[in-house]
Amino acid sequence: MKENIVIIPTYKEKENIEKIIRYVFKLPVVFHILIIDDNSPDGTADIVKKLMQEFPDKLHMIERPGKLGLGTAYITGFKWSLEQGYQYIFEMDADFSHNPDDLVNLYEACKNGADMSIGSRYISGINVVNWPLKRVLMSYFASFYVRIITGMNVHDSTAGFVCYSRRVLANIDLDDIRMKGYGFQIEMKFTTWKYKYKIKEVPIIFIDRQEGTSKMSGGIFSEALFGVLKMKWQSFYKKYNQKLSA
Image (cartoon, rainbow, N blue to C red; front, side, top):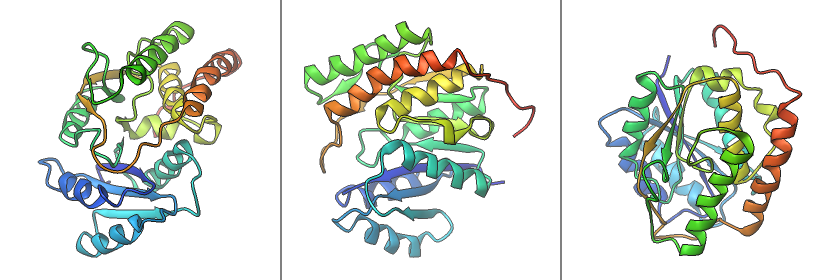
């Protein structure tokens, strides 16, 4: 079986995509990459296609017809990665807000017993660079709110820098994950926690993108905040039973 695949959703990332791909491929641990591109009008997919000729066995891409949401991009990537037999499946942004070097730390956490490892901005204080104070506070208190509502002891529940072991994603009914934006990140962590898988937060420093444009919006956070209440309520009527193997 193959070991590591990094899923990177893209929309208008021509400034960053080649740099992030080459950086990941130079890391001391071998990672493959799956790009999920939502019909970027700036030629992001064309850049990836050229690089696929250079890295035919390590770089893959799924093109979608338009912007269908962060959550559905990752679900598409998860299903593809499971079909291909990968053991550790990662989420990461294309814009270098996540330091690719930290992929190795997330990998080591899962290799050493965690079922999910999270690149956490808040496990050791507030480690965010270049964000306006309002946005930092909104993100930090969103995670605090999630802890209060769910009882889940995760300090950075909206984090998008994550490693899953194969058995976690094989166990979860991915078609039952409903939230599409940053609420998706919360729902995946909550579901993993409800299945009683081991979650480890790995401290990172998050640096806001230097190139390209942010995809964050108030509506995304509204979905997350209101969706958490619905998610918690629905969890009372669900059974979370681990399969013996995946």
